Image (cartoon, rainbow, N blue to C red; front, side, top):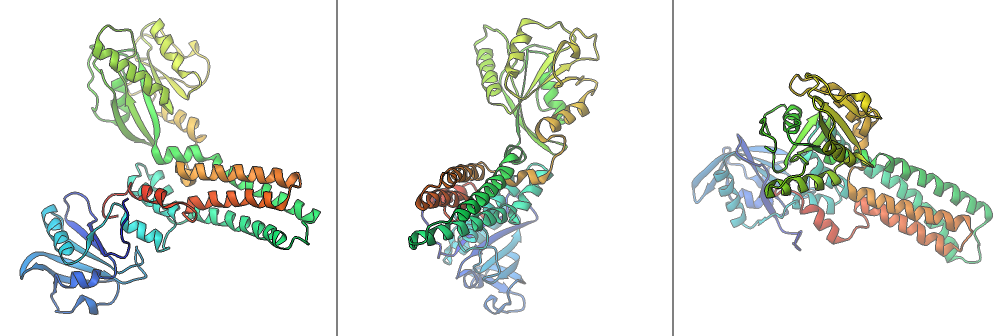
Length: 456
């Protein structure tokens, strides 16, 4: 986000697409007076005289010409989303109407809001912390009910509370040490070292408990990056359609129909998955197919999960074995498709439990696949609590805090001078503060809010 004046009154359309109702939102010191100049109330009462959190019915006018019949919400500071005066003009939902109303608001003194600027003001004015602000994005972008609930928990301050409690304990320790540094005639006593060691170990354990489910949280937030690989004509595109429950990919009996990747998001019983159907991996002289095969291999290398599809009605070939090699050191499920035909490949030919016999054509094996997915990534159960540390930025900051605490534990255990202990604890405190935004620099804050949509 470019540098902006946060004292400006800002405005933007806060609803997307065409609908029954569309909202133009205005926030800032002059928001009520600006809209008051455009609004003609049915009861002739000025918006300046309206009580907070009330609706007024009337018209938006431009030089006595009616633009739209509207309801205007007046919400006065500090009890608003931004802690500033906010006015929301509820118009009819056509984009032409909304654009015209927004244009009038801008002509009367407001500035077009930057992406995420309403939420940025909410953060800067102390209504929410940075982790809660980021939860707004997660809530908007959530693809499953579990992801939505996880974002709601974070928006309610679940992570902020845990981080604040840890920082409070850290600051108490830092204050005790700083007192000794300020008054050098009082050395740290032996029992004080032991007390700090106990508190440091306890904090490290708290951090490790949060980090333990970070990967699960990332999956809930972003989805499992899932790649379907196999030889041509084993049923990869049919499997994609089966999982999506729609005809998304072209399916024919001709090998090599899929020459490029097809990507789709799907919610499978609460598990968000970004599924990539790839071109069949095989030796080919066709230049276009070669490009598709290389892309397939690249996707397979980066995947969270590989769905390796084999044609169970055909003997295992060298190309199948080469594809199976992709499963080494990765989470993978081997799917033996076409078991409705005479089987030449069976589950007992493989070791391990991630082997499932299916028939996409006859709809056999879907439940087993779902159960195996839950077992692989969520130990059989999916909880919204896993999403508390799904944000990579939060996870990295907490990891840095834990590393600083580990260093502090060494300095305490080896009875090093107070200054060294204080430095390590300060580093941990700064790292934790980056999660909530208390110690994060302005560039990172701007980068976070540029990910928001306009009007939020």
